[in-house]
Image 1: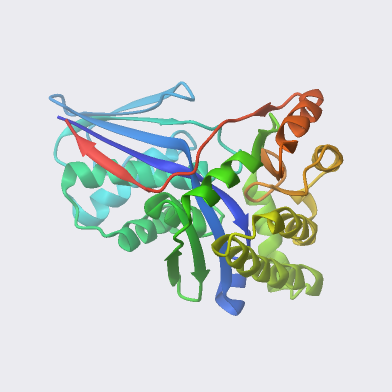
Image 2: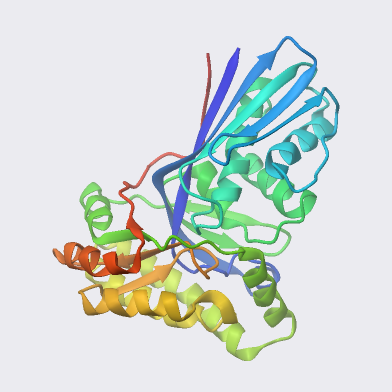
Length: 340
């Protein structure tokens, strides 16, 4: 038997960073995000041999072990092994050897939630195989626990829920890991217009999000007024964008994004840099009305709101920076699993 899954990556439209503890615990966070047609994939093949093979096809990494209940967490393929270890510890249900193969449509550190989405996809494949009774909230929270608690990887909470639920969601974050997902019913013409106007651009750089997130956490713990005030404004930005989206006021998107871009840079030092600032300013000169560095910041993907036919001018302008535009569509569905 073969068990498969795929989960969509996301772009965080507004409120980014307010899902990270301790800010979300103390003040409550809010984020607006949407999933796109770039995915993380996981496949489990049951083997006759008593061995475990884990491999990331996109990274050309592979490890093989004799069958055991806990695989070593050693810096190589830890997400794959961490999910397996957690399932064995919680359920002790896997008795057969298997091969777990993963693939992600965007590189690690690109700011589209790749790591968390991959954990959701892997967990989905194991859930399909082991017939685990996990609802959407259960699965997203479990993925969060594996990544943030078991593997001690720094980050927020939005990515696991976006990958699991899919679509456009306004998410609220509270103390004790409480998350409320509010799916938004978006008119098809609004969705198509946003996909046309939001230009997704890969800067050909990556970053270590943990460094930025740790500084953000430090700023909250030390009651840095500038950083905390910026997070308050970003939370309000998420509410502003939700209202504009639901009411079809898409012409406001660029200005709301630009407001968020200015606020986010106040959260931590390395969210932007001179290279990313240059890309942003050139895109605005070419006709973008606003934009965003995706994810924690520091590199990876950026996206820009380009009303009218300005996307083509912005594309031409950005070509000199050596990056690439990625085509995509918004998706309505989250984690999907099946078996053959």
